[in-house]
Length: 246
Picture 1 (cartoon, rainbow, N blue to C red):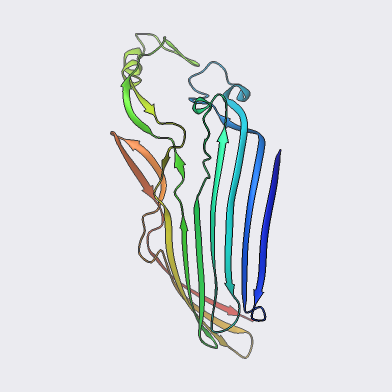
Picture 2: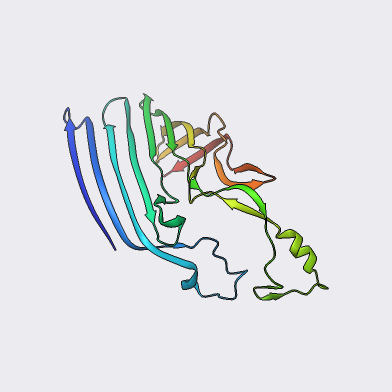
């Protein structure tokens, strides 16, 4: 269950050539769920989902602004959101409030479209988002294998017990919940579009570049050999499209 209150102001300027919007919001949430610390369906004799989650509260609040230009050769919009999203559970993070996994304090989007001629348009799109909050391993410590029954797998000393024992000796020492923030996500895209009217319908040529400056945005961050590493997707990608409408 959630409750939200919001207050906004909207304004049209110069015969709707410009639009301006500002809105603030505050939301509270009850009975939200989250996996408990160390929850796993592999190394436990209990497979009940209810035993793996905690129930708590959450809140989200922020401010949204948008400026939009609707007329002229140059049109587009600029939007910015400043927000926070938090969770609190008695059984997680020692009862301390922590950022939710989708908490993104800063979110910026810029979209510009310039009409070079009646049938030719150049577009620029820029995006910026704060990195996702993560819980990472700060160090490793020597742990001991508690017994020879690892969940559903019964291991004997003569059937690979020693190899499992050695593997589980190095255990990660985790930080507080979501205290590390991944690098920010940002990207610039450009597109040039040419439309030519034909006797029946029109023809469209479009040339674009995705991720112009080849930003290595993190898709997945992992801990390897005492170092944080990231896996990225989609480097700079040129594109060409052709459309024929009738």
